[in-house]
Amino acid sequence: MNFKLQPIPMTLTALPTDPLRPLIRRLTGDEKHDASSHSTLDVLWVLYDRILRLTPETADAPDRDRFLLSKGHGPAAYYAVLAAKGFFPADWLDDLGGWDSPLGHHPDRVRIPGVEVGTGSLGHGLGLAVGVALGLRAQGEKARTFVLLGDAELDEGSNHEAIAYAAATRLPLTAIVIDNQSATHGWPGGIAARFPGWVTAMVNGRDREQIEYALAKRHHDRPNLVVAAVEPKWSNR
Image (cartoon, rainbow, N blue to C red; front, side, top):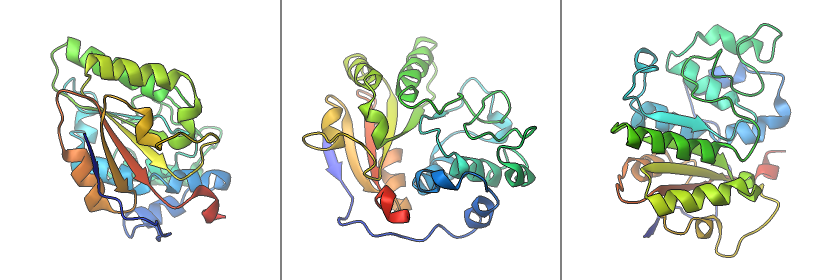
């Protein structure tokens, strides 16, 4: 089953207005990953503002929804959203990558409230999310599992095993792939063709209403894929 909401062609849009714009501007020192980070901003905001059953107060609750940022390179947008939602003080944003700062150039679950896994080594997040969803189902929990990937991560072979296993076991898992045309290798039929057996949706990754609609839909019998297309990576330079 597929449904397409995304208007094509994509056009470059400005960063969202408050509260995220002033927060993300406070993060400096990792400008080479600006394009990677900004590509995730709208999806992350919709997840934390409208979708996830997760707050600073329930960050350790057994029945919380789980979110894994597989696209761990350039986590500035992730940090801005977590700060906006009160997971940690906004002052932390002023010291990205400092020697004693909790905010490293990859998220650290031990040091940052609300972070489920330490990521940054591309290609691991989807497999971890499959394990999380499988564990929650084994425990009888109704919590949802979401994982955010970049399109280039799909070049890593471990993802193919995770995709096939999730489809075969009909896991209650939602994978969101940011498509900013940064993948080295193409794929016949596009990104969705890499996910046989999944329910798929194509959305404009800058349209928050489309993102919310796709992520809010529940398909209990199969894993879900949302491909969020944004401006090409190299257009930001």
